[in-house]
Length: 591
Image (cartoon, rainbow, N blue to C red; front, side, top):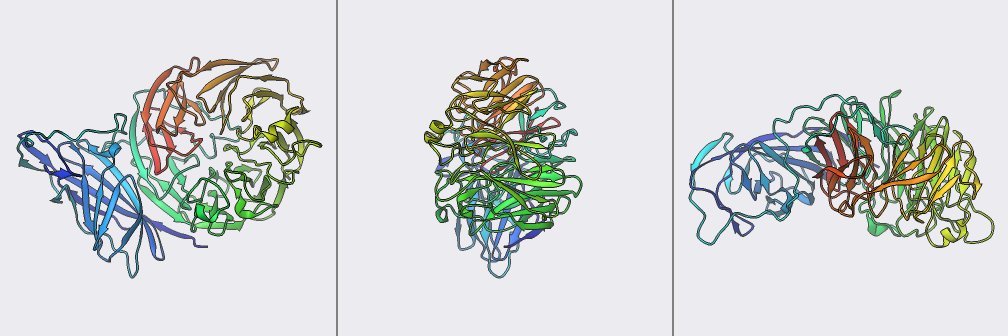
């Protein structure tokens, strides 16, 4: 397994000029005045390993606005592009042509757009030395050049996406200081409540960071530093002002979907949300690498150097049949790592939790007492009450007879002994119909626990006495099939229903009542977070971030952030929302 750290090394800043030309077969119409042209390109290699590398390219337009762009350059040593994001690329004889997609065709004056790619190299990997934009050589300055009206019958190239992401300003100010977000939903209560977030204002995209893969976990914020991990098994520190890579560490080759027994993530690398440990200044992540191996890495948060590396395979079943999706939990100097199965529930897996010290020693584990399945896969991981961890467990093998520990909410002690549990009375039929509680992590609401899952039934449980089989305080049959994690403020829990956002209140006696449902025009099924007078939801399929009124569910604001992984949830800090997407991280100002 490979672990290599490379700080931002190759940085080429050059000027790029934009002129009237034909892009992708369509003429760009410009008015008959002296057009101001000029821009700069930043080319960086945040990660490199034997035979491969990741590169990021940022174009800043210094001249008049352009709509439709083609950037070209030559690789000095015959490098090749193997995968690209936020662009389309072709390589011919070392000459690279990169073109816009529908959502990033327009670049306003003093605005930027960026893309990235993975590449291969043989003898060396020198950076390109020059670029051209729309056929004009880079000059390093802003110039004026006469242009004429577009030929008869042509028209300006339209944008095919009316909600395309705005480009960040080249002079984006640094964000104001915000509180840390060191684990999923900010802290071990998993309430996702950023009480010191700046009041909601006009939303704008501060920057887009194109990374080497999809970001499934929540980005973390520690002392103003932004951290993210990708399915390409790379961990990044990003500059909060502009999203530039400060350091990146690539720890191995992710698993190709074609080599797995089932699933839907391709490639499969780092899926869960990392956790930061202030006692050691380490950032912890679990990476899946070729062969289906699961490894816990502890990174120096300042340099990216790997300081801990230890295998953390689940105690039962076939390793590559397990998916490590739940967020990591830091508690009492130990890291807790939960496992479920791949999409399709194939092969032999058993839900489990593995624990080690932050030094990577003293392994303990818990396995759901079922013969198969019983996944622990809720994205928030454990909700922590003192020293007790609460997990949701999915459907197990038993569909009749004795209870097998699945379809439940369980309480685990620090040494991973089950100390309490709740299961619905109809757990056996829920198991048979794949309608279990495992899809949403438990929510802590006052003196109660709220559990919801695929059956469309919410259960109110009592903290400290979950109730065993059928021992709920109350239940709410509101049809919410919940996936991911909720957010909590006071006695209100905001639910990640597959049909869209909802809010439920819980009375002092434990009665659950639906407060509101968002309109059907808000198809946001992501996991919410709260702050700045709004509840924030990601429509991960549509690529939009919504800010909703916490009391009514009315839309206060929305902005495009890019298509995101399932169950995506924003990180809130300062006046920013940070969203992991299929191509990197988007930072939204005005949060």
